[in-house]
Length: 321
Image 1 (cartoon, rainbow, N blue to C red):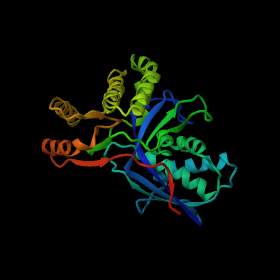
Image 2: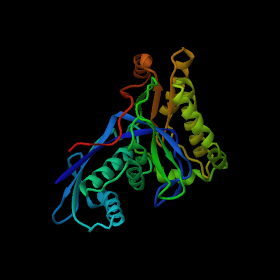
Image 3: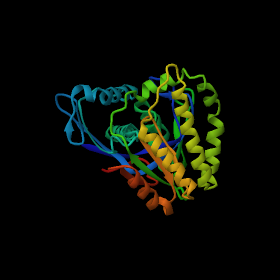
Image 4: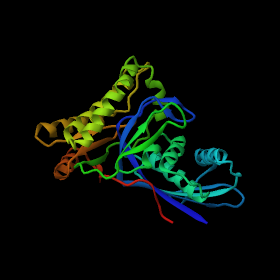
C-alpha cells in the first residue's frame, strides 16, 4: 500500500523569524503567506523491509541525509501510539534548491499528509497543520492554498495555520529570481536565534499584530499597492534586524542589492512591483500580470544567465492516490 501527497511551497509576506519553542517549532510571531502554484513536493510512503529508506528525486539518501525525515516520522508514530516500523519514503521536490524558496514548507506538509493517509489517521486541516509544523514551521502554512495565516499560539494545540482566502481574486503574481546559487553560510535556524540579539528585535516583534492586520485588510480590499509596500517593509525589517544583531550578519550579496535597485528603478518608471527576501540572497518580485513581461526583460538585461520562474496562487495539500 502506497500513499502519496502533494503540497506546494509558500512565501511569507509577513515573516516568521524566531522560535519560542525550538522543539515544537512554536514561533514568536504570527505570519502570513502566499502558496505558490509553480513549486511543489510529491511524497509517498510505503511499507519497508529491513531498514528505513529515503529517496529524494529518485536518489537513495544516506543515513545522515535521511535522519531529519525519520526523526520526524518517529515523533508522529509516538504521538499516535503507533508501532515503529520500517518505511520507504520517496520525495520528488519541484522547488529549485537555489531559488530562495523554503522547500521544507512543501516537503514536510506533503510528508505529514502522506503519513496520515498511510496510517489512516482521520485528521482535519488544523491538526494536519500542527503536525506539519513540527517538521518545519513554514510547512504549517502549506497545508492551505491561496493566502494562509500561521497564528503563533503559545502551545502545540494553539500554534497552527488556517486559510485566510484559498481562492483570492487579487491580481498578484510572484517572480522567483535566482541570482546566486551558492549555499548560504548561516542556516535559517541559526539566523533566527542570532537575530534576537538585535536591539530592534523586540520593537519589530511588537509590530507583528499591526502589520499582520494591515496585510489582512490589503488582501480583503484587493489592494496590490498596500500589500506590496507592506511585504517589502516587513522583509526589510527582518534583514535590518540581522544587520543589527550582535554580532551582525546578512544574507545579502552584491547581486541582492543590485536587484533591489533595479526594482526601485522600475517603480520610478511607473512599473509597479515590490520585493520580498527570505533567509538567502535571492529575491522574489511581487507584481501584477500586465507587468510580468517587462520586469523579466529588465532582469534578463541586467543580469547574465538569470533564472526566473513565474508563479501565482497554488492549492493546499492534495492526495494523488
